[in-house]
Image (cartoon, rainbow, N blue to C red; front, side, top):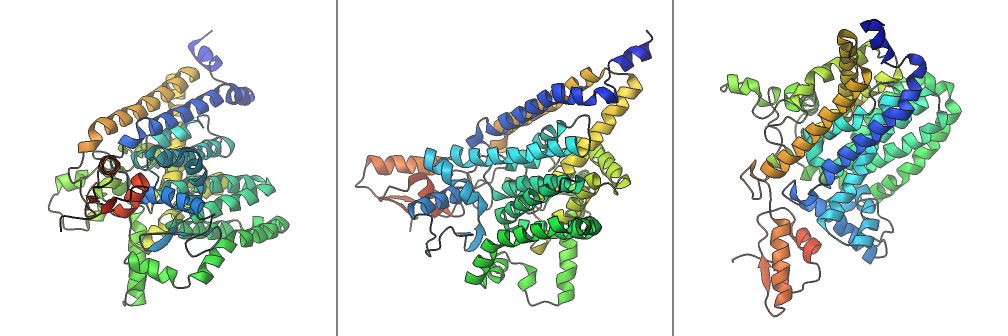
Length: 500
């Protein structure tokens, strides 16, 4: 047998593709999910080093909801939104915390652990999109590529509602592709996941609506050909919109107040043309490769430190330190060629729904953030099509390696899994060891470090000496009153205060 013949015998033919998929790729997929979960859960309270009020308030609202018989403070049964910092922007994340709070009580492990498990939904759907629609040989790469995406690594270890929205959005894309493939009934779970993403995070409202409109326009003929299903979907959509309509009727000025609190240009007294230009500028920030792939400071900033052009063109210095990993881009820079390769392949096959849907999701991704200003939490949904394009690029590259160097398919697959898994654990080790000192501003405008350490110690002092009033300063973090309730809700002699 010649070398070429031996090589061909080690690679599965098209006829045996599904045997390999079912027998081996599922094992790698489960292994990828295990790596993903381990790198989220190991030492979960220790990184990020802060426990933010936006995390604590979700569990606190869940505890209050239980105590109030599932009524809001205003007496509304199963309220659509909950208040956070003077604005109603919490919804789905609170309800997902109810059962864990009932069973385990309040703790960082419970709050963040619940969020981590929910992000597993997004990781799973990425793999299924690659398998069922992209038809990738390496479809199990979806969770692994997501696991080594730095901005996702950081935020998926928090309970910020942005990761919940993105995970639900991945389900939205998967089931829409199923519907577009001919499984008409899958339109209904697509709408349900779209609604979950809509309610999960306020920028998700814009993103989901824009995505839906793009799907409606691009596949108008398909929807018309299956109009009976589409009409039933419209009825379901009306049902899913009811909680939002109820909230809007009860809080008619909430949208304007929300935009005012965020200092959005849409509520400023400026010309409409200026508002539109500002929106377009903010929108275009979401496609800047320097922002996504280059660590801070970027290479161009190092070469040209006195450059006068807008800084957002050449770096990712748009985000607070606590939303970045020092020395990393939001997406690993070494994956940029694979991302570009996958993007080009998708553009070449834009007529196919499997590729057109991620492209449309990319177009929609910055739409929510642009309403206020660009920020990674508001634009996190870009990670979903980004991972898909990167995985497609990996698939094409591995296929080229296999053909060029006649590498055994099994060896190539195992080596790829091992390299990406080791990269995930290396990132975890780096974050746990060096993350606490990446940034040295631990106060209000920095990391806001210390909630667990300060309030646990204050609670010990207060419970040990009930006759002593213990005061905790409120000036080092946002929403310290929420943090106090989260860590020590039953200590009447523990109060917020300062030296004055």
